[in-house]
Length: 420
Image (cartoon, rainbow, N blue to C red; front, side):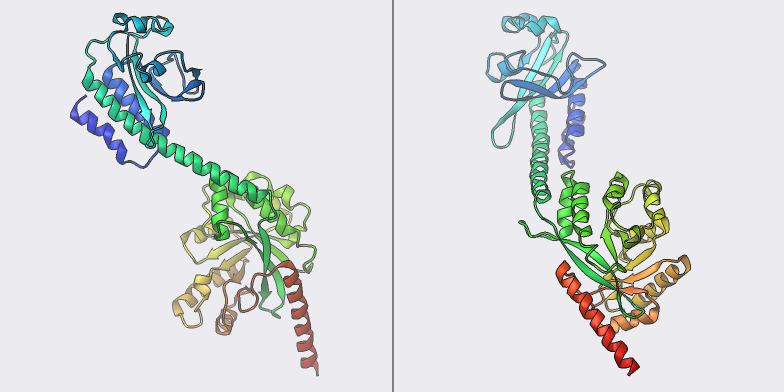
């Protein structure tokens, strides 16, 4: 192998671990250079070996996923020293001729080196063979093959780490799904007109180890392939509070595009009055298929379910969501509302979004309001609804019902005072 060819393949070590693709490139590069017919990586298991990666032209004698007993063929015999790692001509080696595959395939030349992981464990072997003998094969070729075996070991170890990590995540999320987690809290949303409670944002809380934010739990669930399952689990828990909350209020539920496209929302939401449901899509949600998303949402919206874009003003993605999905509600991100009373740029941006909403028939909900002056500024700008710590923190269902009673009493007292 020339220095240029060697450098081009070894440079794969500097790439991010891409697992299968990288290993397949290595097999193809070495097999082509050596002029051999088949290259493969096999993994040793308890009683057999499975061919994980195979490279050949056309229909070869083995395919990825095929398995053979450990004592069949060359691999284990090479590892145990019964056969040499390099056999340029199997016809000259009685031990090789005694193996049935030598004549059946046939195998005229063979190279095999073990693959060891960093902790010293034997993973399997990296092998090449040709249907004909090849006297040009030498120790230099074997040395290059060993270099490539180290590269393959690096990639395999990366893949194994990813697999172990995914299994651990899957177990954690499965434990969540089997428990009473997450618990749901309800943050009140107030209508600026009359400052009455008009809705509740449903938020998940996880009382589990490791301690971390809800978005990290949902992110891990998605990485484990259980993202939609966890979302459905959380939404079902949130909807249990609907009957207890005032019938004139709605619930807003965070919902990923993946769940919306899954087709599972219809059955999940069907027991609830559609007019009391709002599906929130966040700025951070990646939407690759707006057409498909609109199609999935259409029957829900026709039935009365509303759609909100959360975190508007936090980034460019929320603007795309607004233009593409034409939401019923636009929720101003707290990065825009906090300090809006003394920041003219924030006021200008909020004013533009409020004007846009007015023109398109959307409702503006201002999030993250923490001071009276912020509240007053948003009222003057024309926001329709508001939520934030100033008016109410996320509450358990019991505390949310207590807040409803307090607000009702205060409204009654104000009404009586004004009429006196």
